[in-house]
Every structure is written in C-alpha cells, then in structure tokens.
Picture 1 (cartoon, protein in one colour):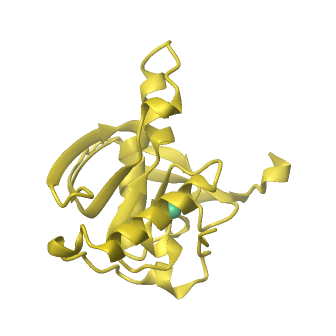
Picture 2 (cartoon, rainbow, N blue to C red):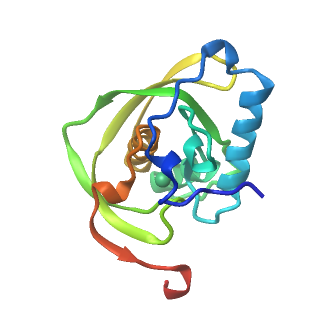
Picture 3 (cartoon, rainbow, N blue to C red):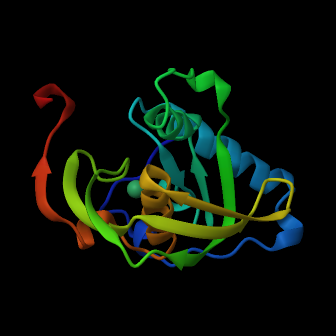
Length: 176
Ligand code: ZN
C-alpha cells in the first residue's frame, strides 16, 4: 500500500518542483503517477491527490474517476457508473483563470485526517497542464472540480486547506 503523509510532515509545506516536460513519460514519473492513483483509490472518500501527499515534491495531481461521476450525476437524473469515467492527471498545472464569484464550501483532505472546514473558493477555475503523454491541455470547470483544482494547486505550493478554513471540526469516520 502507498502511504499518504499526514499534516505535520514537512514535505507538505514545500513548494513542489515542476516536472521537466521530457521526463513526463519516463519510468520514474509513470511509477509516481501509478502510486498516486493507488493511494487515491485506497481511500473511499478520495476525489483527488497531489504528489507531495505520497512524499514526492513534484507538481502533479490526479483527480479520481469518482469526482467526474459526481459532477456528471449532479446535472443529470440518470446515475452514470464511476466505471464510465477515468482518473485524470494534471502535470505542472497552472491556474489561468478564477471566477470572481466565490462560495464557502466544505473541505477535507486525505493528509488532514479527519478535519473538515469551510473554505472560500472561486466557483469556476481554468487550469492549464500536461497530461501523462506530455501533451499540454486546458480544462475549465465549475463546482467540485473547480474546488479540487484550487485545493490541489494549494498542495503544490505548500498550503493546506486548514490554513484558510473556518469552522474546522474533527469528524473521524466512526462519528459520521
Ligand atoms: Zn488535500
């Protein structure tokens, strides 16, 4: 099992390093991405993970298939199975645009067990990144995905949601 580091680990406070574009398809980076997916899918409530969360100070985050299913099912009455979606990898992500309109949203983190709090996030976000093949793309999103883009980019800059959250509460699974 791939270990997810917890909030007092110094690596979560570092500014992560960009991945040289010619290294994106290397065995080394492929292994890190594969480990990130394993760690993410080991957590029932995991919707995304950043590389520093598995101890790698690199600018990579992965959004789980589940997050896309949640988004899709919000706009439709038909429940699409999670298997209709794939994990999506964002390498060297750069937020290009954030909506001025913001909302306070509940947030938690796989590295901050088991705290939850309200964080003010832009409702829409556009991110530019490289995919696993080393191709550049742009992705604009709202709702949960926009929130994820902001939370994960914060991780790459050494920021945790508890730094900006209000009404933080501790809610271990047995209390839920
Ligand atoms: Zn997190």
